Image (cartoon, rainbow, N blue to C red; front, side, top):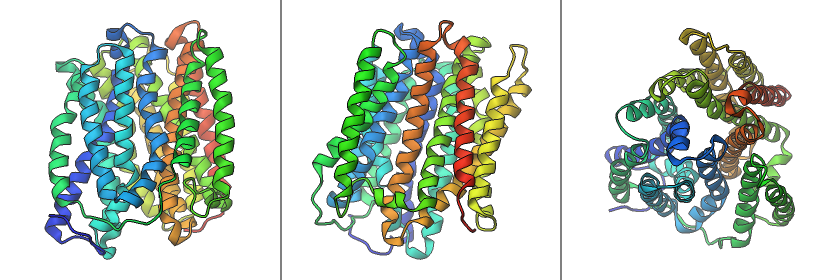
Length: 454
C-alpha cells in the first residue's frame, strides 16, 4: 500500500521502489542501444533500404522528445507515480507489438508508442527519486540513477550481440516483457504517492510542442528520400511556423511548458548548446558505425555488437570520475576538453581503412567514449546549479530534452547522409563522421565560453 511521503521512504521500501525504477530505466536505455546494432539486420529482413530503417531509431527518439516536457507537466497534475506506471505499461505493451511487426510501418508505429511510454519513464525519474530518498541521501539516489544508465548503455551492444547470436531480432524486444511486468508489479506496490498541483494541464502548449518536434524530426528524415523531399521541406516549413507560435505563446505564461526564461542565464544557455551538439555527435557516429562494421568491414552482427562496446563502457568509467573533477576544476573547461577528445576519437574513426585491426578500432572508440564521459557530468552540473533552486524541475526537463533533441538530430543526419549518397552507407560513412566531428567541436566551443567555477 503506497502513501504520500515528504522525506523519503523507509530503507526496505526505498530499495524495492528504486529496484522498480532501475528495471524500467535499464529497459528504456538498453532498448535504444540494442536497436542500433540490429538496424542492418532489420533492414535486410524487412526488405527496406538503410536510410528508411534508421527511422526505427528516429521514431522512438521523436516520440520521446515530443512527449517529455508535456508528460513531466502532467506528472505535476496527476502525480509522478501514475505517469511513471502508465509509461512503463505502454512501453512494455509496445515491446510486444515491435516483436510481432511484420513490416516497417507497423514496426515504426509500435516504436512511436514505445517512445511515448519511454517518455513517461524518463520525464519523472528525477522527481520520483526526490520522494524515494530522504534529503540527506538525495545525492546517493541521483548517483544510483547515473550508475544504472551508464551500466545499461555499456551492456547494450554486448547484450544485442549475444541475443542476435542465438535468436532473431524480434527477441530484442521480447526480452522487455518479463522485465517490464516485474517492474510494474513491484512499482505498483512501492512507488510513493506525490503531491499534486492544482495547475491545469496546458493541452494547447503540449500539442504545439509535439507538432514542432514531430514535424522537425520527420522532415529531416524525409530529406534522405528524393521522392519525399518536397513533402519533407514542406514539413520543415510548417515546423518552423508552429515552433514560432509555440515559443511566442510560452513567453507570455507564468509557468510555461517550455522554460525559456532559463535560457536567459548565459551558462545555462551555453550548456544547452553543448549538450545538443554532444549528443548529436555521439548519435551520428553510433548509428553510422554498425553499418560500416557490418557492411563495410564484413563483420557479423555479433562482432559488430561486441566491437561497439568500448565506447559506452568508457563513458561508464569516465562519467563518475569527471563528476568528482568538476568539484575541483572549472566544469566548462572540463566539458570542452571532453568534447575535444570526442572530436579526436571520431575523426580517427573516419580515417579507418579496410585493413584496420580490432585494436585499431577499439582504441579509437575508447577515446571517443572517454571524451563524452568527461563532458557529461560537468555539463549536467552546470545545468542544475546555474538555474535557481526553485526551477530545478524545469532545468531537469530541459536537460533531458537537450539530450533527446541531440540524439534525434544525430540519427536524422545519418538518414539524410545515407539517402543522399549515391554509393550508399559505405560511401557516406566518412563524411557522416566528419559531420559528427564538426558538431563536437561546436559543442566544445560553447562549453569553453562558459565562465563557471567548481
